[in-house]
Length: 137
Length: 307
Ligand SMILES: [Zn+2]
Image 1 (tube, rainbow over the protein chains, first blue to last red):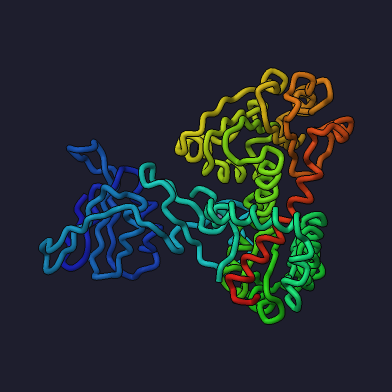
Image 2: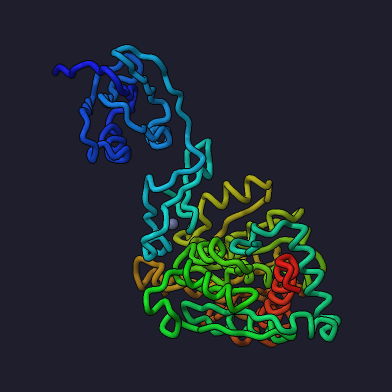
């Protein structure tokens, strides 16, 4: 398989294999009218297998979402075909409208206009809890 | 605007202060009977809870204040589809403080973010019920003389029992408390509370399925209901149920100064034969709840500058 190299945009590398699609969804890439490649199960010396997402456009990339799904991934920023920056990721303290609360008794299930907010409750284990009902994400 | 949604919204010092005020109210009720003259408490009960609502209402009346509100979602604007946020904004125009009960978890938090007056969570689903915990704390304080240094047993549904989780969190800030967790295997205290609260605060605890074997060690026994719908099968429930019913026989080897608490309503988990035993404190707990609600209303109205 051949995927064109990026001129201006991003390469999200070292996504744990299997999480690429989830990240693609949560980043809202499906809705964008830009060239995007999701490459699954790429051979990796470090981890055996990984996923890669290439975005050939200078979009607003939500690094919190990437940090939440794959904090060990790397984000390369590409300008004129060369990597000009490698972004470091970390678990975000707070996520707004990234994921939805699954607790059926949560107020967010009946009040549609509320933001879905999760805060980092346990950074060691990467556990997030709903701001409203404290259910685990 | 200061609100109380979770028991941990109050610091240990603040809880100790509330207890001191409640004990003063008990001693000198007349001193407090005009404190909230001209002030209004709005009881917004989106689901019925007669006992909690009457406790808040009595608390406000005994402070000389007035009460407005509704007692079920059908009689409120929620039945017309009004959001919790809008209700909170509207009620802020009429009242000085809100006590809110809601079946959805997090609703009082949403109200507190939109109201311009203090909001007290009067119970949100299976989530929080901080004034119940305040009632529990005052009861332990009055019965034991202190909130430090005793063995407390929690019996029944420790998995879903929000009153248990909340009381354990509150007690984790006091010293030398031994916790005994008594429940069927299916209803054990969740790991995140064992690790996140008990272990984290160095509170020693033991787990058992047998109430009778540990009852002689207890200074406080906090009973909760074991509900049938929590079990996989009817047989399993019936087999286990009786082990978690407190009877005079099970109390035979208990300490003479044991304090028996229960958040009520009780179904059958405490035999009515125990009600006249001087160790039964669950009706005193109801009264203590009113005094703590009075202390909390006073504190929040003072902080808001309304009194
Ligand atoms: Zn939630």
